[in-house]
Length: 262
Image (cartoon, rainbow, N blue to C red; front, side, top):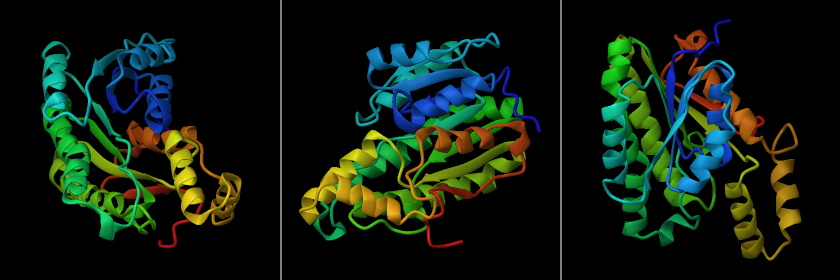
């Protein structure tokens, strides 16, 4: 099986913590040159030191805040002017605050749509020329199992994640002719800062302890535990390899079997 990414360059968003960081580490282990993209330069510098270099890789980083209009495009244009070749794009952005859909404001929808779908579109448009030229491209979007089964209490996230999935499927139909695949990885409950904040919110709403909520959530998962960030990253990294060249336009849940649909 060809999992070798030597000579390939990957741009990984949200790559200083959680699933994004784990994916950057995994891609580097497979031989890729990795460019990290996140808003905290100190964290970017630290993460850079954790990436494998045993295969002669060169790793870089780009500072950009997804919540600032135009910031991603400006930072990426500057980077691509010096380093124009990108073969792999990992779209990954932290989800919005939870809450009932009926209570969500128009601004919450607008902000989340921009942070996720609009920024994803900006990134894809920026790297598409180099992928097309290379005849090799991998676009992997880290979304959520809410694409298949809405999650109670995450109304805005459910809505926008679904839009991103449709966007990705459409892109896969358009870009396949250039050797570019587009896929979505759907994490379920995963050991990250995000899940800890959700547990805290649910515990407060239900007037229960955090441990009670965690145990309740784990009982709902067939394998009996949350996934690790590394397990989600492994799925994302595989989809970036030459071995996955014929896999495109799909949603891959990494949720321990919890999602109730096929």
